[in-house]
Image 1 (spheres, rainbow, N blue to C red):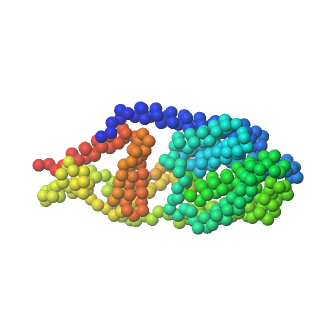
Image 2: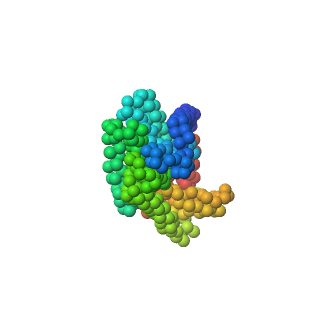
Image 3: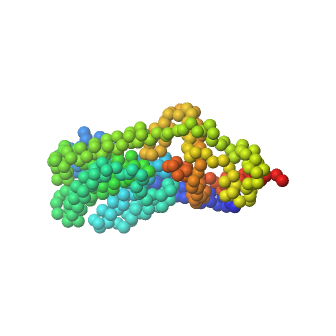
Length: 394
């Protein structure tokens, strides 16, 4: 049986992890802002303030867009990190790409502090896991084809930029365009792949990939400098970015429309609490089929069975489906009650310094509840009391 004794130690560890995590995020944000400087607003104003004949026009717009994405990724980690795993991975991709380019051009090894901080952020991230995963129905065939159609040309273009970086044979490479565009391509490719997975926060990946690729394409259309991709590929890049974002919005809308809960009228017969059926158990005991109150399995079998059902009672709710989660968008006067009957599978898992209980009814309904050790201890005590109450009198 769990005891509440170690909780203070676990709470201290959790606080320390959170402090280090947020500290690393803030440091990365400061580095991005310090490195970008005024160019952090270039994606917003550069279209009208920069000279389109400048050889660095495409490079500066694209690189500043990537830095802008990295900054936003750091900001959202300070708000709801568990819901924005894609943003954390995007931030790690950008700073690791920058460090790699600096090292390839003979820069100082102190730049390795950036990927070290990124690794610390991922290691201490509050989400259950930061490993990209494929959820049910992800990726869809349409979005998978879109990613393949966008990533392959990016890889070819990025390979050329990397050769320019390492060779340094032209003026554009001397300006740093080769290295900067390598980071742009790396970011766009990785983030677009993350956007079609079931990793939390995929919408951030969709908009970020669309923004980076769209900026690269539009800047190439407006300027004929060598660092661009040319008018044809620029047009295709803009079209791809638009279709990629719109496809995600349409698929999210489809999920919101079709992802409704089907309820049945059997809730009137569903049990509210096992104690309300004591009379039935006592009648069974009078017939000689009493259950051994010390055996949890027999105790569970003595309770009435009901049809598999999940009920969701919402009050004063205005909701939207946001990347697989129900998000409240109305007033603060809200309430919800979730009940799952006829559980066929149950499991207790470690969840940091808490215990996560997982329940499944075999019909596709799934509920997870994370409790502190004190709460688990209280529930076990309640179960013991119930078994004592359910034991038939002599």
